[in-house]
Structures are given as C-alpha cells and as structure tokens.
Length: 105
Image (cartoon, rainbow, N blue to C red; front, side):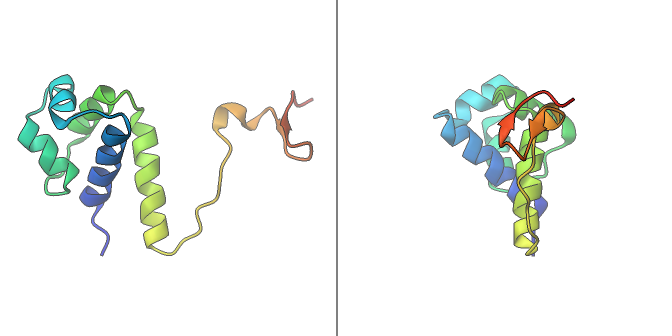
C-alpha cells in the first residue's frame, strides 16, 4: 500500500541529503523541531501544507517540485507510465522535430 506521508518524507530526506545538510540545519531554517522534522522524513507524521511549505523553503525547493517527485513515485508504484514532460515555460518554444529550442512562429 502506498502511504503518501512516507513518499513525501523520502523526497524531503533525499533532497536534504543531496544538499549535504543536517536535520538540525533544515529544522532550524524551517522553524520546526528537529524531532518533528525527523518524524516527517521517516513518514511517521503527516506534514500540513504550511509545514511542507516551510520545509521546502528551508531546502530552497519549490513545493511543486517536491509534490511532482512524490506524484511520480506514486505513479510508478501504481504501475503507471510516467512520461517525460517539457516544462511549461519552454513548451511554447520547443520544436521537437528539430530537437532544439527555437521560437515558434
């Protein structure tokens, strides 16, 4: 069974570790207790949207990026195909037939 709080915790922990930061550093920056952040990362506590926002800011990550990664992990666990996508800000300037970025028009 997929437990959303575990997936969120895994994504947050992976992001923190990739940055080489400690729980203490991130908990201080997010203004959340060290123990609570640890429980969120281990999937033992559900993070409210406000808390998730604070943690994402402390990690200097847009919350949408975190939620996208969680969504992709859930989709894979459900056996769904996760397509590669073009970011919205580039969608209007990509010419797939050329494989390069170029103005459309």
